[in-house]
Image 1 (spheres, rainbow, N blue to C red):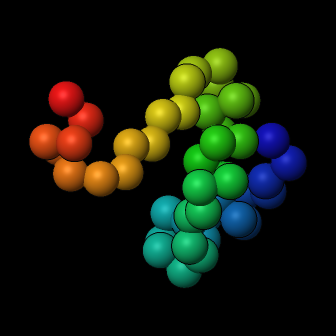
Image 2 (image 1 turned 60 degrees about the vertical axis):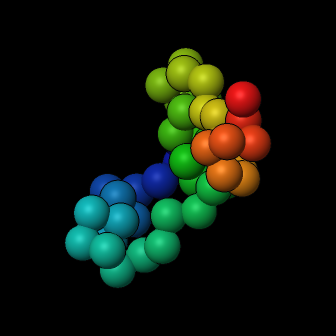
Image 3 (image 1 turned 90 degrees about the vertical axis):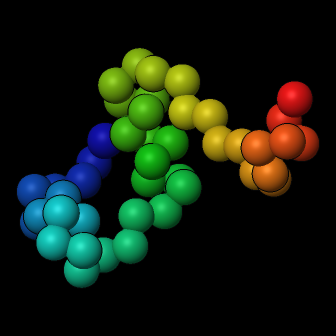
Length: 45
């Protein structure tokens, strides 16, 4: 993933904003699907 322990520590403390790109990279590293839905709950039906 390329993130150092200090970067992860900043994420955990809330000192560094987690971006969608970082979440996608984490999902890729874990081998899971990263899905983001926008809109209201009713519009997804």
